[in-house]
Length: 338
Image 1 (cartoon, rainbow, N blue to C red):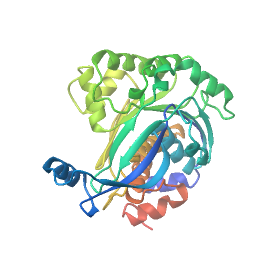
Image 2: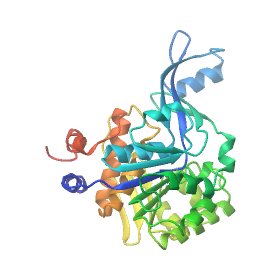
Image 3: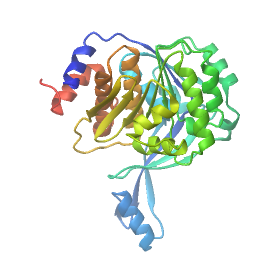
Image 4: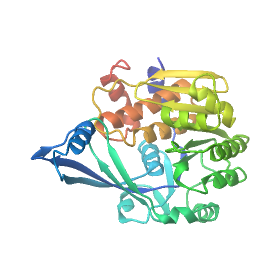
């Protein structure tokens, strides 16, 4: 029913203003060959390395593209027709191909993505420029943007874990932003300590006093946050929401999405995907679609449906979903009637 209601909502959807920040990466995609043929799976690659079957492997570059959580989220909102401003670490010509307004605040990360049938292997080199980035650099970029940033309908914040000053920036944004929905995807928090987790929760609680704050992450990331603040009992989304005191915490996964909100918990099965062709970047598409749906005033089941559809489409086809392709895609997956 949620997917049917979603199709009805997009028929009169209006463009929103969206700002996305602060990371950026240059993603170089590779296929791996060894012993005269392709290495199809991460498991096979690991087993062959461990067994010493080959002393060397050959990587074949298949693509070089703009990446990073902020970039991926911006691309999804642009595909849905929104007016997007990306403020990231974008000092590379690869970002010039993006069809929306961009402002760079430093060097991007360099990510080698090794494509395997059972999941991508990502190796990243992070620039030192992130250590010096903070509120002043963001303010400068926001001031130079022609589109709204602190006053956008939706503000998307990615990769908190990769920026040492991100908690301080979030705290400062509480006095700057006038947005409908602010979404945070914390990134890899597997090594987060209790002090950092508590500081993040306090910053998010302060932001939530002025807007709807949504934390969106996968199960492993949310479990890491909950463990770091020693919050126990109940579903992991409820645990993190209690610790952070925010409007909602959402878990996205291959099987389902779950939102713990002020009016209760909402669960929606994911779109049925037979075989994925891309897995890195699907969660970012989910988060972006969810945030713009909430900023548009859509209820939680419909917002989860849009997030699931965008994530599933990217997983299955490696393409960012547009509104004009939504009905056909959901019909193909058996979620709605043609």
